[in-house]
Image 1 (cartoon, one colour):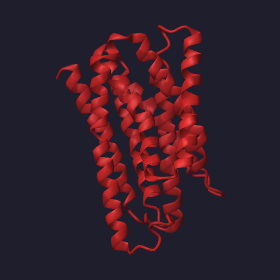
Image 2 (cartoon, helix red, strand yellow):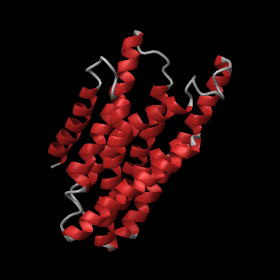
Image 3 (cartoon, helix red, strand yellow):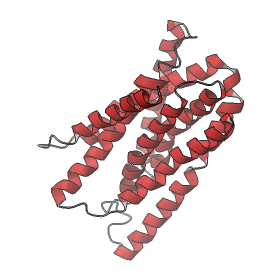
Image 4 (cartoon, helix red, strand yellow):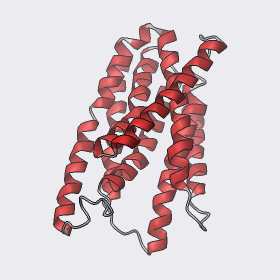
Length: 249
């Protein structure tokens, strides 16, 4: 299998984790109410840990060799500021589209980097594909739950059947997001691989944005008062990335 087809297959598999996470989100109750609540928060924390491992183990180590310290700092600061501005705009939007944009904000840059990595024979490509899939799973789960939440004033008075139809629409939208992964991967493979510095800048930009996202959005959501199990999800998510690096390295 050529590196281009490897990119397409892995990026598709990573993107497919979004609707798979949504399918898990359709499970209304997971055991007792306390387990259901802790499980949701643990899933969010797991996604945060996976995102941190992607930054620490792949995105930053693979992108700092060719750029000076000034460019590294500029890229990461711009990433943090860019995601911060996006966060402000999405908070004002308060709609379903904002959830989709937030989910794609880290997926697309990582898919671009994935394609470029395989084009140049980078060692982190396989691990990055694995981490993208691992983080997309809880992101799909959480986004589905938020977009179909019963507390939504548009759905609170609907019947169970009507809410089920709404959930199917959201799931269909998530399935339509899957091709964006391989499309971005092909762009990265064909075009970005020719411009190492540009690729490195994008990866560092994504790193800064992901760090902002983790500590502004994911970590606060993972916290659950008087419960101490959910933060272990973050430990397990990061550990998953470490074990993945050992396996592919």
